[in-house]
Image: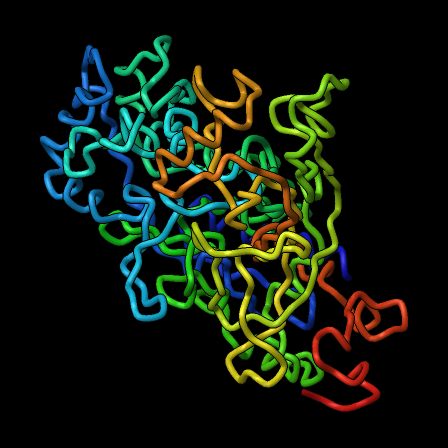
Length: 471
């Protein structure tokens, strides 16, 4: 009877699909109706074939942009105000001042920073020709529409974000469509200098993932923009690596999922303490390894090279697979290291400390990847420095830290004393991708046994709240 029922349901579904009748799928738990994962998703724009609309030929990327803007007249102005274009936030209160911060002017503990390294870093900027501090952010013809909309798979950006010479711009222009995982992933999967370096939950395995790697992208073929929805070219989502506050313009699980999704009260009782990701992202770096440590102090040595262990231009690395997250309270805000802040070189400086604790009613326990660094600082002024690494005068060519720091400091305006050393850092990355199928989510024993993954005392509890009580 069980097999007959299965054949009967499949037959009805197949027949309905052929004749175009909408159907509901049934679960195996007593015939309960299960909503389609697409029920809460926006309808993607109907694709328009641009073959005849953009015949080419095009000599430069800006030629393509002018052709795009001749029809999409409002898009240029929208892009000029987007964070993907400015690489800066809106002004945010910092003490008595207001600052715009972002990739354009912050330090990290991976490739360190953009200033003086524009030619290399801006391969991932959606513009053309950002090679120095004089880039014109008001010129719409500098916008690179193809960086997000190319669907040909042939478009490649080089130094300063300019297309490499081998790109046929007409082929790329004629292919344009909704941004794909490939176009988003070109920057976000390979950020920080290579595949899987930064995030841990974003890497090239997500181009065509299995359901076990990510239930949304693998199981349901979601695109990045299905969740990171876009209004007037402003893409939803903020990373804690470049913002003080990530509560605004953010992507939440409850954008699609009912907050009362769990019928089991034992699970539902956790929702005022745990972020969804804590149970549903049990591990990351599932197929490709992620970098968890980067020591710049060993750069320049003549050691055997291996992309996951040592490169002369960058130093020593540690990569790992199947990374179990670090867990901590997070209320959506961070304390951010800013260029020129004084450090204690004898202890690790946390570049972007997540804020919140057990007494904070707005904080939840989140999963994080924590990346440790050992990076260059001014040994007299006790602040981190921005070296120039790229170009003919950069460290990757000269292997001279002094000249690299002089050049980087000239770009940032931060004085360099002429004396440098290296100090430890930590950087936090929230984990929201590589969502596991429900059957692979954390179970009670994963946290509430002696060998569980939570450090209860570090989280502010006397011990396991199953034994000692709640928050």
